[in-house]
Image (cartoon, rainbow, N blue to C red; front, side, top):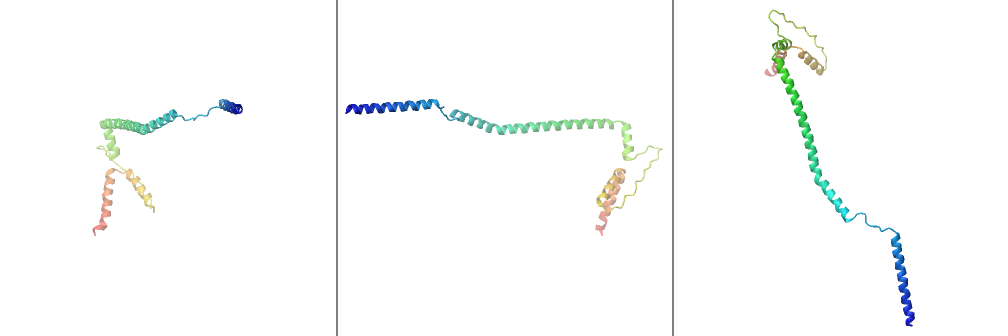
Length: 166
């Protein structure tokens, strides 16, 4: 009886070894599936995210400051151009002939012995539109001497104040 028992145990052991060999062979044939995200890759991704977050605000500030610097340089260039234009205008005003020409054109001055005259503007149209009337008045005022415009302003202010005096 002992021989039967031993032989059964030996048989079971042999069957177990065969099954184990089959499992190993099957495991060797199919590729081992490992987790694609390893600990190192996760740590690298975490470090990269931290760097992006840490550098986002300073980079935004840097870009905004570069834009401000470009705007300031553009404004400085415009200011230089304006200064140059004003210097040229100042140089023109140093010339007595230019001053004389400006006085004649702007202030309607005449030299001694000359006769000054003005061409009368056509009568303004009587339109019901106050905006059109105002535009026509402004256009007429642009072509009159400054002192006429000044006195017209005084007369209009006096006319507006007259009803409240009573």
